[in-house]
Amino acid sequence: MPQYFIVYKPFNVLSQFTSQEGKPTLKDFFSVPADVYPVGRLDFDSEGLLVLTNDKQLNHRLLDPKFAHEREYWVQVDGLIDEAALQHLRSGVTIKVDGKPYTTRRCQVERFAGEPEVPVRDPPIRYRAHIPTSWIKMILQEGKNRQVRKMTAGAGFPTLRLIRHRIGNISLAGLQPGGMREITNFPF
Image (cartoon, rainbow, N blue to C red; front, side, top):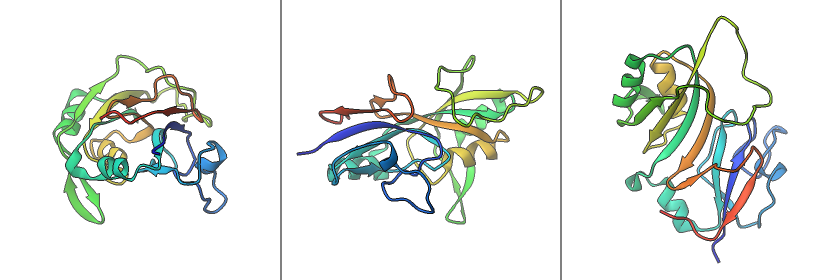
């Protein structure tokens, strides 16, 4: 029987259940049946929504680019991002994928008016009194390796903190880092 778990992967945790070089893994935070695994991944230095399941069809639907579901990221960038950079992100940024140039698809990008309500990160983002930061929301329908970080850097505003907030209709709402909830089915 398919099982579905929504988890908030903490910062500096591998998106897998087996350790490499002694780094913390999902096993250190979440207790799930042995046949349950993460669908996709988040980088060690990223945090946020991961889906854990034993449903191989869901795995295919979430990872195959032809299904083009939305992935929403909340991103803290270095500096006060301007409209030109936001437009650059929206229209596509040329990044390197497997050593080759790749232009990202058009996406939705908007600046938060202030800092969104997010959990405090441990360890915190560096603080520099005279260098401001901005928060943006990015909604993509593709997921290349380290794509969001490469895009913001390509637009001149490197990523400081990256939180995947939503996949399709499932969000982090109500979860804190290390939190998990089970759902009975995955709504698409």
